[in-house]
Length: 313
Image (tube, helix red, strand yellow):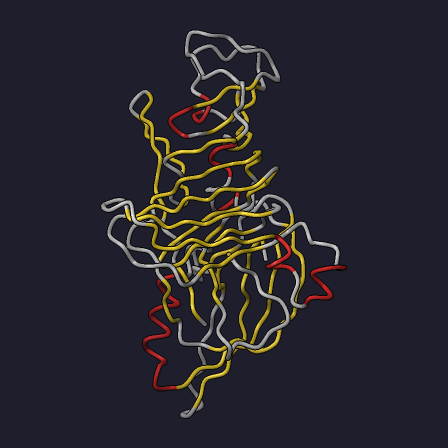
């Protein structure tokens, strides 16, 4: 199994001596054709009525007023007066953790993303007609990669399906053959109306395990929780999530390397990129491995069962 530890950034703001932060996958430096909210930026001198929406621009976050007596109360600081409503439309496609899968809406959208020291791009849970993907070297303006992808190209496996199969609304694109450059951009140009779920990037790494078989189910959970005793990480999401149970097989020779890799990704979402050896009927693209146990009673090979948890496939 290959995986990508998706690159992230943290946006922060300090208010009355307290720091508030939100984490995102690396966002766009420029967007066109994206719907822009008309909510005002929060003003500490204003009083907002119940049901009013404001934006905290430093966090790209939208809050809804739940009180008529909120003058000067910073929205992220007090959930009794303000409800976190989500992220601005231009950032929804870069959200992670509990808001993973939020969609950015636009028409003829053009999205420019810094693509430095990466070689994989993923666009998950996306509804579109066609998209052009260009990788451009910022130092020379050379077009390194130029790909045209249509929704039917990635949802139909045969000519008959291409002509007659109803195109699915939820799709994923994982491009693995991009070039590692110290200073390049990815430019995504969508044709027509589009809904963009999650965009992430990073370096492809080998996890060193093989996944065999699946058992797929839905679970409803509401927040991330780490058990103080076992240190196991529980799912944090709003609404239902997909839980994929798999058998994991790898050789004793790669035990230590694999165990260290697993330990490094247990507390974060990663992008799974299957290889030909991985055998399963359905795969969650962005998720995480939870409660991973490694039996060592077999000197030749290790076989164990675990879960991969995520919200998109």
